[in-house]
Image (cartoon, rainbow, N blue to C red):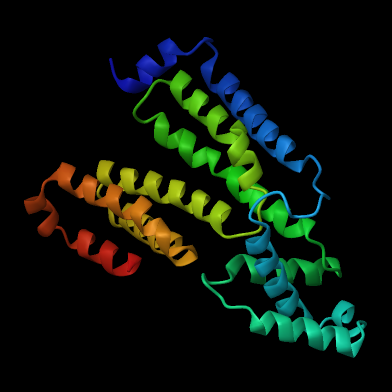
Length: 243
């Protein structure tokens, strides 16, 4: 009996596929809902200094845009926003800050709820690769439990509302691990390229993620044997792309 058959037998209900999808959607919506509570509260609940850094950067990028909503601002206010944004040191690549500035331009206003919603969406969507990863090794009940834990853990709820690269990093870590495992299961160029690109993008978003995607990748190589890995051109290609 394979693992998937065991998973289906161990699941609490018989109509597994449809019910499984419904339960996953409900869990994701619950995770989204609890994070949207008090969305308009000032961003002082978690890593306030780090959030202010990103907000100042995003405002500077937004005020630098040639859009009607920015042109309507007083010249001194616009110059101050650009100057303070330029004065901020960038530790990680400001991907989320640029994305936030573009959404500011689309909505025509600066609003700290926008990056908060983006961070929330990144974190909540990370539950999908986590679920797909866990159910490869454990029964469906365990995969569901891990998804609930990930989405509703109080610390995760608070941290995922923060305007910083960590929620995006978490999503990309989980996607990287999922596609690394897929490559280990099916050693094809397609799986190798997807795993390499996601791994590299994860480290690009935040360099400390290298530990979370690099060590598991080495472990996967060890599981296939060093000799076989050294002879596999896809291993070298994946490492080069990720770096």
